[in-house]
Image (cartoon, rainbow, N blue to C red; front, side):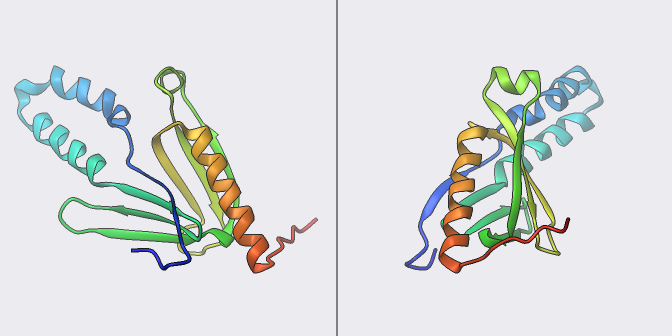
Length: 142
């Protein structure tokens, strides 16, 4: 449902690998019953999260029963980085950290993203394109 001038660049969800340790502990303590319900809830929460990168904005939507939507205009992005644990590197997952000038969401993190370096590069290109199109320059205090 993007405006006509806005194009979809990437859409994804976090990998369930982010819940691996939690699932293992739930299996070990399944005899307590409660961990089974917590694991199912964690699975549903991760599955319900949607991240969308367009040529104009980054949108994150999540929630099992009630939904929440966070949206950041790309011209507000200041910096981004990728972090990967050793296990995430083995399965080609990572977290993309995004610093913004938005007061509501100064830092975003997209966890357990497949091919995080490629996604971060797409994000960087879109940010540069938007800033050039809107003639936005970032000033840094010295």
